[in-house]
Every structure is written in structure tokens, then in C-alpha cells.
Length: 292
Figure (cartoon, one colour):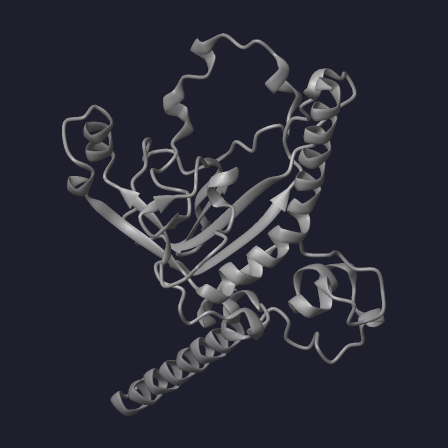
């Protein structure tokens, strides 16, 4: 084969390889829902409905069919909305330090009975839960950095009623990060615990979930910011032992929650927490009657 023929062959192979690469890149860049939106809801397969349809298709009454109601109040960046095909109405430009936040009230927990001296006087569980999705390049402190994920949602398993020897479940396996409650101005909202986390939830995205009253939305916003802070673990231990002042505890990362998200969460909280308020009012009235 002559030099000219070899050059032409190499040029042909180069163009062929380039064409294949371009076609492969185009295929990879196509959304998973390619071609799905043109189908009616009834024409879509179960997989297409669950995994390849937009949020409005799956979680609203858009098609006049039974649907799954999403109990979460959302707020997220535009990039998060585009990536996970979420509605534009919950895009929050004011969200800082996180890709998305989601809040709900949950009935996971223990039912407390015997209140007011009556066996059947019971307070059903109603807890606040906060989920945060973050860029996993962020330096979030972990007690056990080698643990990637854990699901520790309390009251979800019957083993909580078993008397398990402490040696089987040492505290350090929790691998929970510091921080975790809403902080409103100078004041923390209360106690909250990590119940679930996955540091590799999706490529480039980590996930943490907290539960209990520390993540219930604050009542009055005013001019104060609502934030969650992550502190240096060693500094936090020194502060708890009284070795350093609170102002000397290093803050490694801060999440600032948008006002719109907090207000929407507060509206849901007011409605659902009414059940708690009605029960407490009833308990107080019964207690007063018993004293007469």
C-alpha cells in the first residue's frame, strides 16, 4: 500500500471513530424521558410512569388517575430541578449551602399512653423531619468518615423493643455529622437527630435526614436568618467540656434556608400540629376537672 493510500485510510478511520464518538455522546446526553412525553399516560408502561415521567405526572392529579401524594415541602436550586425534573415553582434562588431541602411531618414514633392517669389517654407521634441534599465536595464533618451510608430511622423496626447489649451497638457506628437543627438567629430550635444519610446518594450529591422538634419550622421569621451549621468535631467536644467558648468553635459549613421555603413548611406545620394542640387542650381540661 502506497503512502497516499495509507494516509487516506488513516483519515477514513479517524473520521469513522469521530462519528462514533459524536453519536455516543449524543445518545448519552439524551434525557431518559426521550420520546415518553409524546405518549399519553395510558400508553406509558409502568416503568415509564414511575422512572421516566415528570414530577407532575407522578405526584399530581394531572391525568385524572390515582396518584401518590408527596408529603414533602420542597425548596431547591434550578440545577437540582433540571436534574431531577422537579417543578419550577419550588426553585429557591435564596437557598445557600445546599442543592435542595425537603421538610415534612411524620407519624413515625412511639405512642405515649397513660397521660393524665388514664390508660387510654394517648398522644400519637407527630415529628418534624428535614432532608438536605448537598454537593458532596463540601467539607461536612463525620464522626466515622469511612461509613458511606446508614438508615437509622427510629421506630421503623421491631428491634427497638429488644434489649440489645450495648457492645453490639457502640455509639461510634452512628457516623452522624454535627449540626442538624434549624438555628433561628442566636437560638437553636431544639434537639434533632440524624436518622438517615447517604454520602454518595447520586454522583456528586450527598444526603442527610434529621428528625424531631429541632427541625420544626420557626414561628416568626422577622429579619433573622434560618440556618443549619456544621461545626468542627474536636472544637465541639472542647466546648462541651468547657475548654473553649462557643464563639471559638469553628464553623465548617452553613446552610441558609430561603424564607419562602420556611413559610410553606410553617403553613403545613400549623395545620398538622393542630392535632397535638387539641390533644393537649383536652388533657389540660381533664386534669382541671379531676382536681375539683
